[in-house]
View 1 (cartoon, protein in one colour):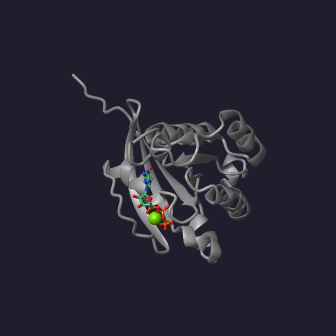
View 2: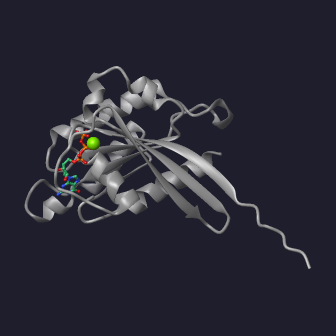
Length: 189
Ligand code: GTP
Ligand code: MG
């Protein structure tokens, strides 16, 4: 009789969550990690951290270290420090405030100029997904649904791997978006 412990592989991925002020970065992370939502707004100062542990298939564990970067940091000079060694990123905008979509390309540029994949993984751009957040408010008559064709083109032109319409309030598409990003990172290895 012998008992062989199956080998469990563990990954640790550092993921950046960026986007303009109040777009819902902290809310998305709290929904994803703790399954809670609050409509009170407390702006993040500097950076916050959260850890999500995911059983990925029978013998893989993925630990996502989420870096919740304050929207106001785009005007600071700390992002280079925060971005160090990240393997993926999420850029968030608010579908009810078109000006936050203008922030998207600025955040993407900031990421592309300040962080790259490790040399062993080819050193290219880290995978980045785009979240069009607060989709629940569209149903209430605020903002507009994204135009899928336009946003597909935008992602292609700006090097996003994919976009998702999300709601931290209703818990829409957050798991799906995270899973897509993890899958993309695992493919790089
Ligand atoms: P900073 O830390 O200042 O950069 O903001 P943030 O991007 O972390 O935004 P935060 O998650 O704090 O959310 C800002 C406000 O939007 C809060 O009042 C949230 O309750 C609200 N909010 C976030 N996500 C959603 C959503 O999906 N739907 C609705 N209706 N409100 C949301
Ligand atoms: Mg925040």
